[in-house]
Length: 428
Image 1 (tube, rainbow, N blue to C red):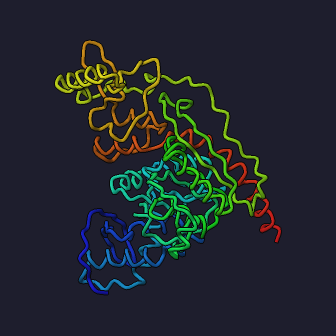
Image 2: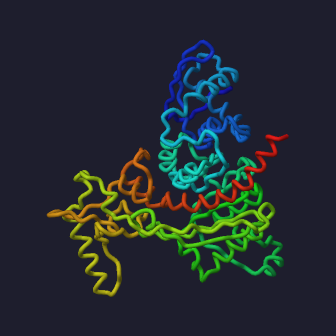
């Protein structure tokens, strides 16, 4: 096998393979090699591993060849190394998958894994994940031991394992609805293949169309419902119904689980060919909001999070200027006994939307750990990136316990389908 020029970024050490001690490096490449490797390691006990094994072996063999060009690294050596790593690579992962999963799911537009964590907590096994941002991938890997595949638009639906539930917090890009008659005249396809083409929702649609999961849950900003005078949402729901799913949706607020006002729309679908439209799914009754912003604050935050005099003066002047014009723009000085505004991905710029008052000092922004808590992440969730990247990641994330509360009702219906099938297999 010819030696390839690949930049090496990370290192994995293991003891012995075929009587030799190896110290190998895992290659961080742009072609999803590491994703294939980590996905294989996490799925070697189920059928999904068949999709990943070939690329995982190739990846590991090249890593060994680059590290030890003087040795003959055969496919057999790579195979033995891979088997060894199956028992060592997943050590010390904060959030390992359940030993006896009740269902399987895939995690699209995964971010740092908030939805994955919610569904793992419910007993689910993730068999595929995709996320394009490299910094988010780093956080995802640190917590789950798995590297997401990259750009979903470049991944064939044929290379995605079967799964019970498709999950995704997809970005909303502009939709264009043209008349069917015009498309026919131009010789163009219509229906979901054309109406959603060029949007990231199209990639969800093509995967659902091919893999036909039992159910899905999609998350987006609440304005998706009103975008383009409701036309965007109409295309989405029409598409999902055409694909054979009964649809349930609701705007939900994270304030019932964390001290943050964060409204999002959740779209849930069940495959009609399986459920016959008789699923008894309802969005959960959410508990009364009892959380306060002071509940998530660190006792002794670092001084660097306190605003400088220059920035604090700027924000005050900015707010005055817009107030004089009748605009509502300005900083948000949070009531410690109340809840915060919505944490956004721009929080890293100045922290203006959520400022924490301090006695005899300028206010401060939240720390990354406090942002994690504001989204419902446990304190053992690792943050291996800079503050700037952490603010972006948590600002783009979900309120994890809210996803789990909704997911619990979805899984209740999935279990009804899965359990009888397991019983039939056991009897046969």
